Length: 135
Image (cartoon, rainbow, N blue to C red):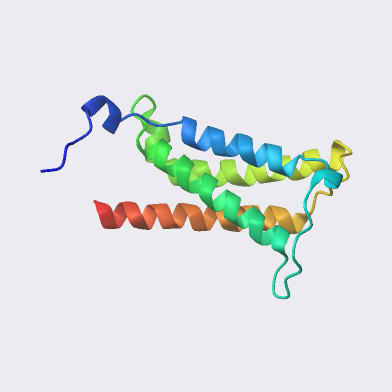
């Protein structure tokens, strides 16, 4: 028989996971351009857009997981999908706005906001499907 986690751990929202990932996203997206490594050229979609989609996919998945475990604010748990979708899109838009205004040699682009939004949506849909399958 497998050991089970104590009840206090099973319901802990684990907010450190999405917050840590969000901090990493901020550091990576606000690094000055001259400090960034060269990226490979892709033909179908840009590497940058794919990278944005991936990091927001992970961020959305971690955020949804954490929000669904929330006990303190039932509204957050009930509306996790829509709140995390809006939050992911706003966070991506904020990052692009900061890139335009901070003069780091980075450029805010609408294609990155679209990649962020698609990654967020796909991450949330994946976690929603896993949750439906698991329960």
